Length: 552
Image (cartoon, rainbow, N blue to C red; front, side):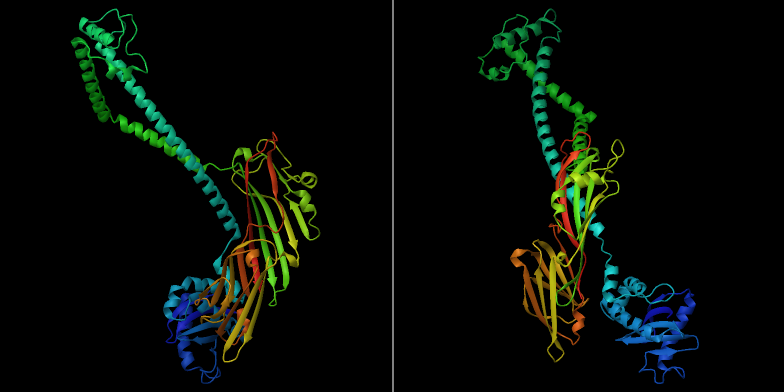
């Protein structure tokens, strides 16, 4: 089969969307689409008389295979030699894909979802106009473009950001306490220093007691008498802790001493006002504040990027399970990876110890493999994961995850949860559906979503349910949701009725979840430095996600 182009038009012949699969000019495509409504209304002889009961019409050069859906036509333009049976199968698939992607069959829905429809057409037909082996569920998966690697990266990123925020808050508290203490010390020291300078100014700015003016000396003598000190050469304004407390308790001093003190205090106020004016004029105080703020900001920024531990270890398992409609496990594969991320140079040269003794006793079915650069004898004998080469520049890369151990398991008991679905026709265009789940392993599943296709946009009539549900009329899907499934709710059921007659429409059922309980009992017992053998701090995160989990 060779499809020249696929298009969606209105009943009046207005093209809404077209995708060509072989090299053609735009004028030719527009000409083919413009001729289509005329051929449908009055088909040429030999192409199916009447035209309305047929889904194709031919010309001398091409064949139009179409299907009317409400007010639109879904159209394939093919060569005359194309296999019409395959063309009709492709057309039926497109008639399901278009309303599923666009959310409706009106002109506004097509215009709003034009790019998504083009991507879905590319999933159905390849370049050259050949049909791909695709179904509605695989097309949905391709358009969703989910990535488990991206989820793993985001988990690592969130873990580092959380640790960085905690470290930042701790450092910010330390900086705040240190600044408050420095402010108090600075205030006390500045006050004492100013008082010393004032006293020395009252003495005529003398460098010693041997010179200077008499008036200043008289003031000094009065102050000596006020504090009970003599002229023995001792500085009366030394760093005595009792000086500030003794001043208000003294008896009234002689007049000369009082004048001297008043002159000193007046000089202090004048000096303080002059210093404040000079600081404001030269912007000295704001500069000091900015420096402190800049220092605090740089310290906070350094704390935000600082890792919580030198080493981060991530143990991830991807589960692939295929169930039949009776709930029996037809396929179950577990693929796990132990990845190491060196956050600092200290974490680049480390040895990781795992519970090799327990892994040996798992029995047949489990396989383990180390990275080619990891010493296999050390792992086999001691459960020690270390690089074969050691030394400067030969450790683990900093900031990039490296898989150091992989494991796999294929057996029917590897499925953590099983699904059993029983749709039964009740007559009168109604179907009764019973679905059960059962937790088959001792683990905790979180954010469990069981996606049930309904084959219709009608809402289901819920008879009984464990957990919660949500109906998506656009996709014709019902979501059966549990925040948590563990031994307390290890089994549950859902019963509903819905209009329809096709019991196959409820398959395949897909399951998604997350868990921190690994199916493989691998555990990290310690991380040591490769150079000194000392313990190195590390953080371990575990994650189990389904790569494909379906009941069909």
